Each structure stands twice: as structure tokens, then as C-alpha cells.
Amino acid sequence: MALAESRSAPAPAPAGDPPAPRAWRPAPLVTASAGIHAAAAVALAAAPHHWQMAAAALLGNHVLLAGAGLWPSSQLLGPNLRRLPAAAARRGEVALTFDDGPDPRVTPAVLECLARYGVRATFFCIGRLAEAHPEVVAETVRRGHRVENHSYSHPLAFTCYPPAALRREVRRGQEALMRAGGIQPRFFRPPAGFRSLLLDRELAAAGLDLASWTRRGFDTVSRDPRRVARRLLHGASGGDVLLLHDGSAARDHGGTPVVLEALPRLLDTLAARGLRAVPLPAPGGNEREAPPGGSAEETR
Image (tube, helix red, strand yellow):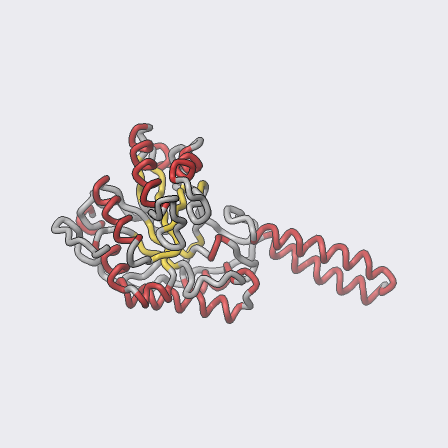
């Protein structure tokens, strides 16, 4: 599907300065894990015949770290935006986010649907796909949506990467989105939401904040758009962060990407419940949302 022209869409936002690195302080679990490793080393040196106890402590610690990394909404490994601020929740706002794009066929259709409803959203884009389809990223930005970093290549083993490889995925993704859309992403969402205890330090150095979600539709595996919408809507309330996919989208039995059928159902029901879909707020909470068809700069 070709990108449709929209005379009311805002012009591309200026790139601005790169995000400033933020101070990094290890999460309490990370500090405690370092202490456990140090204590196990001392214990082994002093009483090597008790190696089984030391091994059990280390194994339990690594199981806990792995579980925290495989739990997308966990804050055990560092800061994690899981919900909108309390003021946004009181206003009945929910954040609408899309992962794994841009897709040259699906993303433009998603953009058209959002335009019909007058809704803005956040797109977590894969860097190498942004390089392949820069016009889709540019159009997403032009329409006033947020474009954020979803790694450069979306590796399935991302959570196992050493620091240098994590840094490369984060920074190459950042550079690709900058070239494609002329913007500086401020958020990072790891592939599938999985991460290791090493990621937060790399995000701090890049000036990025981690973002996850509270509800997901599983639209990459479910072929039933009604079920996808029900998963997102069941118990939904102000402050929720909703996850759909414009990339890696499953198809319904007729071959249509499930997200394109589920999205109108979702937006209709949110409106009926008095909830309003918005993009993620800028880190620090300083962004005021622009009206549909207007840029954020126009509201300041």
C-alpha cells in the first residue's frame, strides 16, 4: 500500500540534540548479585569442600537474574516505563505502541487507520528495516507519531549479548532511525522485551530509557482479531501501555494482517469507555501532546 498524502499532517520534527547520557547506578538486585559472587569466591577459597553450597547460591542467583530479564515489565534490573504517569491515567489516557516495523505494506495501513481516528501512537522500529524502508519511517514522523528504538537487527539472543554487542545494537538502531526519520529516539524496547543485567548501563550511556507494556494482544501468533482486541481490552484502564505489531504481523484466515482488523475494534471500544489512545510521553514528562494533525511544537 502506498503512503497517502495528508495535507493536515505536521512537517517532520527537527532532529534535536542526541539524548544526553544519564547517570547509571546498578539496580539493587545487580549490586546484591555482585555481592553473592564475591562471597562465593571467598567461601570457596576458605572452604573449598563446601563448593556445593557456593554453587547452589550462584545457580539460584542466576535463575533470579534470568527470570527478571525474561519478565518484560520487571524493574529488578533497572528503570522501566511500564505505565503512563498518574496524571495521564487520571485523564483516561492509554499509550498505543507498535513493534517490529516498519513494514512497507502494513505500517502505512496502520497509519491510515490511526489518521481516521485522529490518534497518535509510538512505533518501536527495527534499525535495519528502517534502512530498507526510510520513506515509511519518515511518513510516520511526518504524521506526528513517535518513532523509537527497537534495536538494529532484533536478534533473538539479545538478552545473552555481551556489552559490546548490546552497545552495537542500541547505537546502530539509533543511527538508522536518525537517518530515516530525522529524529532522535528517546526510548528503547528490547526484542520481545527480554534483557540482561548489562543492558541498563548501555541505555544510560546512550541517554535512552527502557519502555515495556502492561497489555499485549499476541497479534504475532493469534489469527483471530477479535481475540487480539479482547486481550488488550480486558481490564484496560487509564495509564495502560498497549502493545501491537505493525511488523511480524500474523494473518487472519483471509490473509489480512490481524493488526488491521483488531485496531479499529480496539479504538472503537476505548472511545466507548472514555479512554483515549496517546503516544508515550517524552522522558521527563515535559511533552504536551499535539492535537491530531498538528506538531508538538505548535502546542507549546
